[in-house]
Length: 159
View 1 (spheres, rainbow, N blue to C red):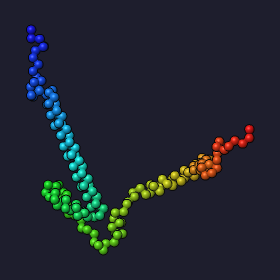
View 2: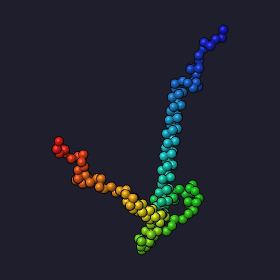
View 3: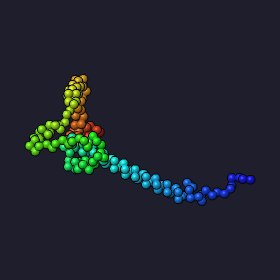
View 4: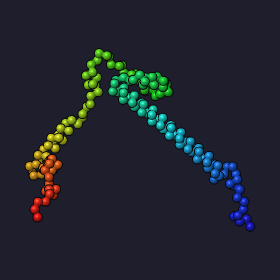
């Protein structure tokens, strides 16, 4: 005898994983864990953004803002040794000219020569196309926009 119909007592056990209350507990715990992970990631991203903004401000202005100095002091020994051991550069003197500060942060174009060369090549190519007979600017095709009406838009005259 001993067929498969026997007693089905597992759903009555409190530890059974397919019980609805145990499934609800697992779903609740997973949602809580996901929420914590999202919050942790958001906090890490905010901290990274604040650090990069501080570095950029230091690079641009030559000194850290007062808030950044306060944050760095609050971090104390828990922060990395390289960033805490590095001293902040001195603030610029009030008598320093703006030109000196601007020249240090002025944009450097590394491809200025290549850009001039490309523009020169473009002009040369346009001249070549005009010599061959290709219209580069084709403004005459759009004269109707200035007031001249094309033949297919004019009213019929005659039979």
